[in-house]
Image 1 (cartoon, one colour):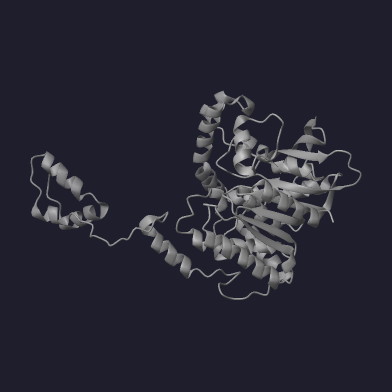
Image 2 (cartoon, rainbow, N blue to C red; image 1 turned 120 degrees about the vertical axis):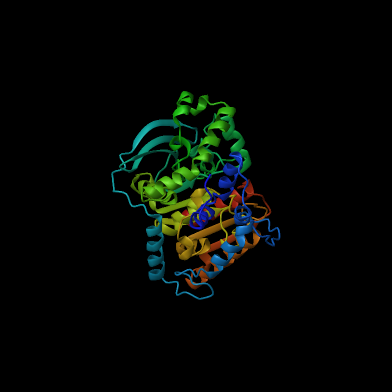
Length: 424
């Protein structure tokens, strides 16, 4: 092989090809020259102290970037004039970041199933939120209503369970074994929508995009069919893993489509509030929302961005973001990251746009998805902003000695709070 010229050697070095050139030369019986051997770059040693950070050695760089970022809407360390006009402008900026404003369409509700569940009726309804989405929902209706009832949008969680969505918050009487286990682990054995309808609320729950009937089904999965009641637990586990692997795909695909995954989910949730307002059995002035984990995340966005929500309960999803950077990033779904949000505001500031309407944040002190310091600082920040809006009594923050779940005791306190805000 001809010897590489200095210019060519420089090019090969840049391209990382010199080791290959050397090996090829040896294969042809040629000896690598001393100059060739000297040209192979050896990485210098670097000092590195273990940090247990999700990003390992690159965490320090991201930490510096975060420290240099000055959120434009809520500048760090500066008081804001938290007026109605300020909150309206802030909402518009978040809606712009969500990057999803599809053409309006009629709901065209279609009740495809109606079941008498004893003290309430369960409807399975299809509604159109956009020209391309026909969304399945369960609506639970108390029996013998004499007037329009208060209503709750019950926003299901994530929990690594993609095969089911709205079923996570509803006791169907005969539940899939995967849901029986899920209810116990996440809702202390009491699905919230069923508990709330028994307290006199009309309750609705939909499948968020990528969950339940809106999950990903790949070509090779068509053999399983759509009827999940026929899936074994092994089927659920296997198909869940495939759906989980497609989280990054949907996030990237929607960006290429000019949208965001959080934007699609939030828009559907807001349209559900609008649909409830059209029902003859619902009082549109008394609509609330609840949710744990991803459901809490959805509840925070929904309450902040839709003023028709009069009371919101955010459970197991509230933290200042900076403390999460080190070791609480990989524990969260792609759906929880809205590009650009943290150049504007932090999550506690986002949910505070709910003011002066009612907000209840329930935190689990043993929750490993968030650093305790981040959860504590978030509650303090929300309280500060509600005070700035002169409505401090409309916010309640509570900590419970629990892991990441919505215990019966937590539910009972949240439901009593909802009764006070939506029934009185």
